[in-house]
Length: 249
Image 1 (spheres, helix red, strand yellow):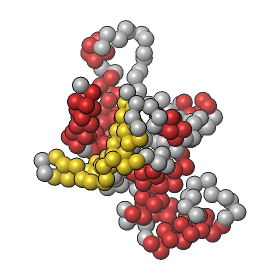
Image 2 (cartoon, one colour):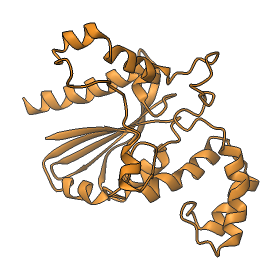
Image 3 (tube, helix red, strand yellow):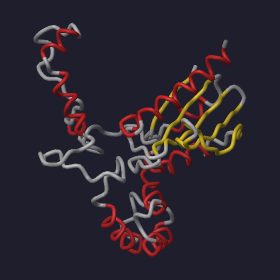
Image 4 (cartoon, rainbow, N blue to C red):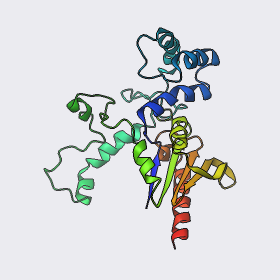
């Protein structure tokens, strides 16, 4: 048994709080902004106590610095899909809607006429239906899935967890934090992994009884890692699968 997750949203508080630390490490906010926020907020940058005015005041300039950053990939410009002159990496999602609604594609997929009027990539109405618009696409009914990982640690199970190291949606800082909270033994320390002698990212392997977890970053990748680094994404997954296929046989 095993599972693979990429840039996961695991714990709302850990993942969202890690954005500020990530922004500091990435050079998006200066020490003179980060240090007061860290002191006054105690490392908690979301759901701040409204009476903690020192924390709220220290977060304002940070918010201003990050307001126009593309959180999916901090090196890309903030995408405006409504601007026909701007080519956005995320535009491929719009193309997928066009592709899925072509008559020839529907026929090839054996989709019966009249069953679906219009395919769309995401349903933006779900969050409003439940009255909790936590994001534009969905509402949270589980704020942390850490308890499920803690159960999996007791099983005969193998996991691969991947982060793009330029993703600020759910930064690698948060992923590392909740992995460390599982208190697993370190099987293989932090080290680079390669493609054709070039560093493609870094990895660390943990184990506990029959459970193993490989954590890997992909250098220069954003939130949807396969969009930014397709070869690296394929190599790390195939290498991991091959290692467990050979050990099983």
